[in-house]
Amino acid sequence: MSPGKTLLVLGSGPGIGRSVASLFASKGYTNLVLIARRAEQLEEEKKVVLRTVSSQVNIRTYATDVTHTHSLLQALDDADAAFGKPEVVFYNAARVLPSALLAHPVEDVEYDFKINVSALYVVSQRYIPHLVSLANADASSKPAFIVTNSALPHHPIPQLFNLSLVKAAQRNLAQSLNLTYASEGVHIGVINVAGQVSPEDKVRNPTRIAAKTWEWFEGAREKPNFEVVI
Ligand SMILES: NC(=O)c1ccc[n+]([C@@H]2O[C@H](COP(=O)([O-])OP(=O)(O)OC[C@H]3O[C@@H](n4cnc5c(N)ncnc54)[C@H](OP(=O)(O)O)[C@@H]3O)[C@@H](O)[C@H]2O)c1
Image (cartoon, rainbow, N blue to C red; front, side, top):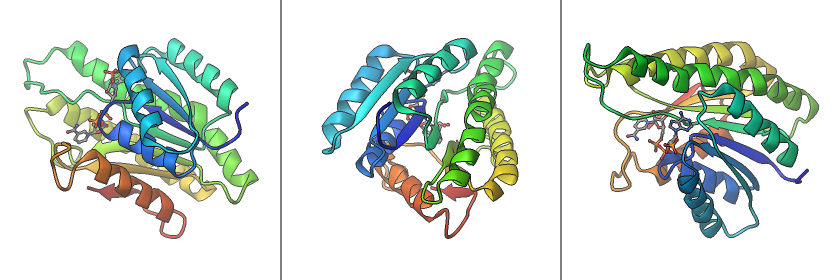
């Protein structure tokens, strides 16, 4: 098993996922597990992180759809065997796509629910008990479970009704986890990105979002906070 702290990124892509992975790696999370559906894009993510971070980083990538529970669990078994279970889980998988109210197929509604909620539930079942044990065993550890969300739970956009409703359900699950496990030493929270992400945007660019995520994560012990709005 590789020494060092491990960050698990579910939904690794060129935006927020990449920036968060690179920043945590530069801060000492030297084992990264990156999960997304496209193998080629994951290779790119790996290359970019290795290029960006000057220190030694170990990266494992798994081309898996998080809604395929069996393959997801197999990938996580493999990653855990290589690095040990993660200290930080970053749940970032989503499809940011328009959905026309009443015209959008119900199968797509169900698929997005699986990405944002069912798979998050499966990942929580797997890692929350471990994060609680870590908090009890090692006072210097910072076990965390971080979910990327948005303003959509409070302010649904009808042209994005599908993402709005699954993000509302996702927030609700994260709140239940927080209400139950924060008192056991696990930092559980949502990073609410309240608008479109773009490298050109002064507020909602991936680099700034990653920096705000790190700030939230660092401050969580002294100033527990369920969410940060960016
Ligand atoms: N982009 C925005 O404007 C925006 C705005 C507000 C909030 N957010 C939130 O930010 C998060 C994403 O950040 P981002 O947009 O910058 O994207 P990103 O970090 O660049 O990448 C997210 C990755 O998730 C992966 N993914 C999607 N469905 C998946 C599935 N079924 N299984 C495994 N991986 C999957 C995709 O890769 P594959 O296609 O290879 O699977 C995608 O590249 C989401 O929670 C989103 O709701 C985004």
